[in-house]
Image (tube, rainbow, N blue to C red; front, side, top):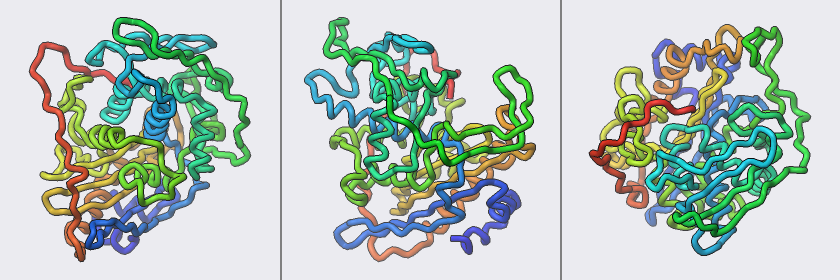
Length: 404
């Protein structure tokens, strides 16, 4: 893969790959080949991969939270309780907030399905925090470790709360649309200790909550952690569950998989609920490997099943890419850090000048190579050929301001 990357002459691209430590760059490229029975095999190529080299996972953690939320629904296994069932969140501890309504959903209520849509389509933060509250901090971490991801760690919502407040999660109700109760989930508390023995500090300074400059590295030791290889494997376990060990799979139904495939790859502008502004939240908005500054559409026939994250100067994407027109498929995952002044939390990052151009060039380098790569058997990609929504013409205002 290193040889392939040297062949792209783009100046920003070459600057980053020549200084992988400075940009905290990690890349995983996965070739997928099918046999005569269409069974896939996977060959992984790694560039500067190191699970101990911390990067802030930001919104990438929304993928495991979506999977664990669906898994928990299947474990509840109660008539009337599914991903579309209306929910209400109460508060029972410091920092918690209620959420009884959601005006962006078709029935006006929150639901796991609606949270997943919002988390995948535009990377909505509240959707993640509510799924965190539904699964619970203890169950999240126990489940991920049991599935073979011991180096993952989910410790907090995406709102400002203390570590103790994040250990407590809200009481929740599943209700019928007439408001009657189906099942109640009590408040929960995580008594399990975390292993914070590996120190993770980044940068030379940061802005604190009072906008004062603190001249020392920001400490991520107790924050969320999702190594790139674990992130890639989670996505592979969704797209190709039989390709990973049984214990690594999430307990999902066929319908769950279909739902995930749709919203991992559907565009915000195709979606009716929520009704996002398709100009602001354009097709490649959360598709970093195809997000060009001037052209916001994907090539004809291409769909990307992925999750991205961006925060503190880190940009991360794990993608499964399909070109239905040319019968091409592959996976690509990468994280890059763009913060030349070394100050975090000041909103002065080189996302537009370095980060996005680099990831776009990386994506195009691999995509062009895959278009030319010879395959013994052309893949049958019908499993992923989804009928997407068509935006209805109605008078509802579009959503332009999302906390992500």
